[in-house]
Length: 378
Image (tube, rainbow, N blue to C red; front, side):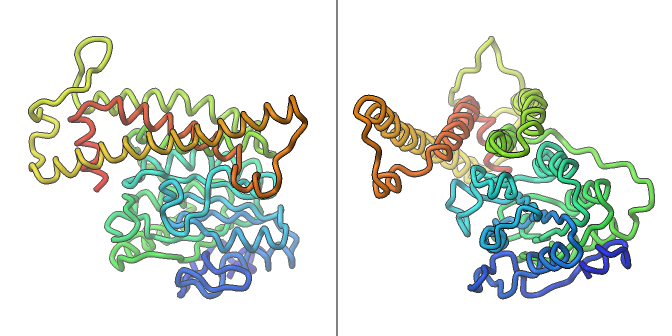
C-alpha cells in the first residue's frame, strides 16, 4: 500500500494491521510487536523510489523499535516524530526522551509527563512541532503509526484524545502532503479503536471536501512545558531556526494557557495567589469526598516527586561542575566509567528545566484548582 501511494497509484490509505509493529527491533520482537510494519514500509519506499519519508507516531507508547532500526541503518532521510506518554521514563518502554534527537534531528519526541492529555494538547504539539517540521522536511510520503491507546476510554493509556482529535490531526497531515498512509498500532479498547479509526478513515475519504477545522480549548500549561523542552532539544539540530521561531510563539501560548487555567477556577484576590485549605467552592462542590481526597493526594505526591527529581538533577549537575573545575585547573578528565556514572549532561539540563517549570506551575495552584485538575486526569 505504501509503495502504491508513493507512486501515485493510490491517493492515501489505511492499513488494518495486526499485530502492531513499532516496538519490534532489528533482531527482537517486543511489546506485542513482531515485524515493524511502518519501518519496513518507510525503508522500502526510501530505498526503491529514493523518496523522503516521515513517520508520525501518535501511539501512547514511544516507538523504540522504529528508532532502533533507523539508528542501526544510519538513516537521515527518514524523519521520525513521536507524541507519547513518557512520565519521566517510567512509562513503557521508557525510551523517547526529548533530548534524544537521532542523527541531526532525525528523531523528534514530544514526551508527556502527565496523564490526561487530550485534543487541545495533541493539537498544540502538532501546531508547534509536527506541522512546522513537516513543512521544512517536505516529505514525499507520510506514514502514521496510528496507535489508538491515547484515546479516551483506553484502560492503559491514561490519555483523553477523542475521535475528533484524531480526525483533526489527520486533516493537518493531509494539508501538508495528501500522500498519507495510516497503519494501526496499539490500542486496548475495541470501541475506542473503532470510533477513532472510523473518524480517521472518514477524513481520508473526504479530504477533497472543504471543512471548517474544529475549535479546541486552550491546552494545559503542563503540556506546553513538555512541548517547550522538545523545541529546546532541537536547537542544536538542523531544525534550530524552526525551533527558535516556535519557542517564541509558545511563550505567548503558555501565558494564555496559564491564565485560562487559573481563570476557570474563579478569580483570586490580590496580586499573588495564596495557597490555602478551604471549603469547596462552586468549581469543585460537585466532586465527592473520595475523589477529592484522591486528587489532593495525587497533587501532593506529584509535588514531592518533582522536588526529589529536582534535587537529584541538581546534584548530578554539581558533579559535572566539579569536573569542569578539575579539567580547567588540573587537566584531569573523567574516565569512561566516571562518564557513565555522570550521565548525559545535556539531557539532565533539559530535564531540570522542565522539572522546575512543572514544579512552579503545580505549586502555584490553589487547592481547588489542583483538585479540579487532578480529578479530570484520573
